[in-house]
Image (spheres, rainbow over the protein chains, first blue to last red):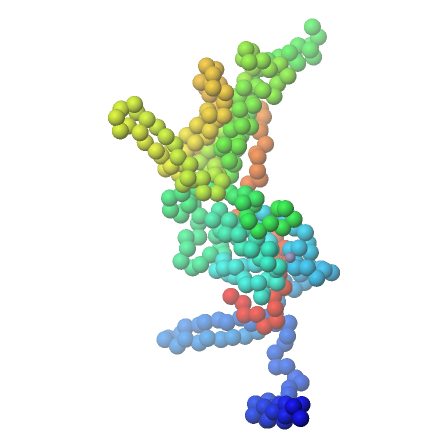
Length: 160
Length: 178
Ligand SMILES: [Zn+2]
C-alpha cells in the first residue's frame, strides 16, 4: 500500500513539473564560456559566447585517480610561477576546489604558495586592476625582494 | 725550483679577488659563505696567524632578498652613548638609507670576534648596483656561485614558453572564463 502511495505521488510530481526530455544538447560540451562587456554611446552590451579550449592539447594525460599534483609527484616551490599561474583567475584569485580538482592538502598548499609568489611580486601581471603592476613601486618594505621557505607551510604533503 | 712549482707557489700565496652577485640572495646566509673566502678558510695553507684572506666584491646589494617578514621584523640597534641616544631601525628603513649596510653588518657579525675582524672587513667591497670601479674590476678572477637561483617573474618569461607549458588544470565543462 505504501509503495502504491509513493508511486502515485511521484507521478503527480512529474505532472506538476513537466519537462520534455531532450536528446540534443544545444552547446558543444568541450567549450568554455566567456563573458565580454562592450560600451558604446551609453549602451552597455553584455555578451556570452562559447570559446574553444586553447590549451587542450597541452594537458597532461595521467592514469591515476589522484589529483593532478599528487599524480605527477611534483615538489612545487613558490618560484614555479608557470605551474601556480594555472590555478589562478586573470585577477590573481585562487580557483575553488570544484574547478582545480585538487585534494584538500594540495589545494591549501597551492593557496599558500600563490600567496607567497604574489607577495614576492613574481606574478605582477595576474593582479587586480587597482594594483601597481611593478613590484618595485610598492610602498615601504613591500618594494624590496623577499623570499619564502616552503617548510613554513602547515599543510604538508610527503614531508615537503 | 721548477717553473711549474714556482707558479703553484705564486698562486697559493696570491690574493684572489672574488665577485658575488647578491641579487635575490639572503645576506645572512651569504655572509657565512663569504666569510670562508674573506678569511681564506677554504685554502689548505690556512692558519689563523698567516694572512691568506681573499678580497670579495659584492654587487647588486640593493637587490638582496630577506626571508618572509624579516624586512619589518629585524631590528638594528644603535646607541650614541648619550642619554636617550638609543635608536632601533627596522631592516627596510636601514636599507632605504644605505643599501650596502645590511650586507656589511651581516658579514661583520658572521666573522669571528677578534682583533683581526676589522682588517678582514677591509677586504670586503660592497656596491649597491652592478657598476664596479675599473681598478677593482680588473683584479677580479673568480665568481662565487649564488646560494639560490634568481626567480623569474611571470611577465618576464617569453610568451612562447608560457603558451607551450604543459597544463595540470582541466577546466570543467561550461566553465565561465574570467
Ligand atoms: Zn592530491
